[in-house]
Length: 235
Image (cartoon, rainbow, N blue to C red; front, side, top):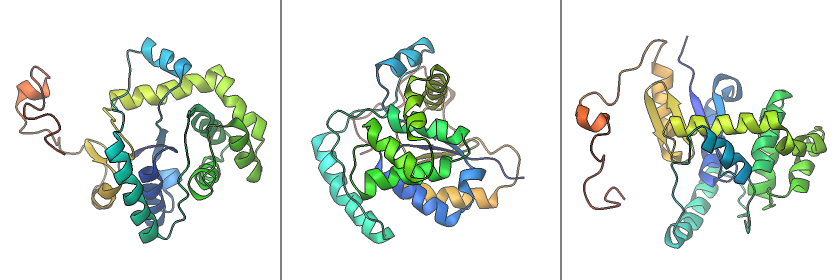
């Protein structure tokens, strides 16, 4: 039995969309064989829930220069993968509508279909998935009760589940998406999928080797900074 991988994904990330597209081509059963964990920038209510667990986001706002680069880069990738790309305009994004809606759809056994519906709305048609009516329409298009999906944002139990996802991301040191984990092994970014697949296909059940082996204990214990050179020195 192979170790079960985890995928941290986000509807707001084009790179998450690209990786999932490739992942499903290589692993058609990925919705069942991988643990999917949504990741997003929380609203105030969700953030307060995270605060109660001592959790936050390992994430930094994007610069204008990086954003402009991503616009070009995502176009190249979409063309290479044969995907439509309609870049949405997010003025005041509220990611709970889609991500908490996905959690409810998963409880209904429809996570895969709902994922595709939201990706189609956001990345193929450029719709604003921050709007409850857009999420409701996407849900209705696959035969779900759109009102029930949107109401997930007001359901304390679903909210708590969403908080747990983001707390897990914090505790797993997830600083961006897409992010795959396979035991100790970590794969951040669209271009690490091949490494993940090679490891997943070659590894049987059992503990993975610790990738931090050989790193000085004083660094692993956090008693000194991990990076002591120029800020941003790794790119």
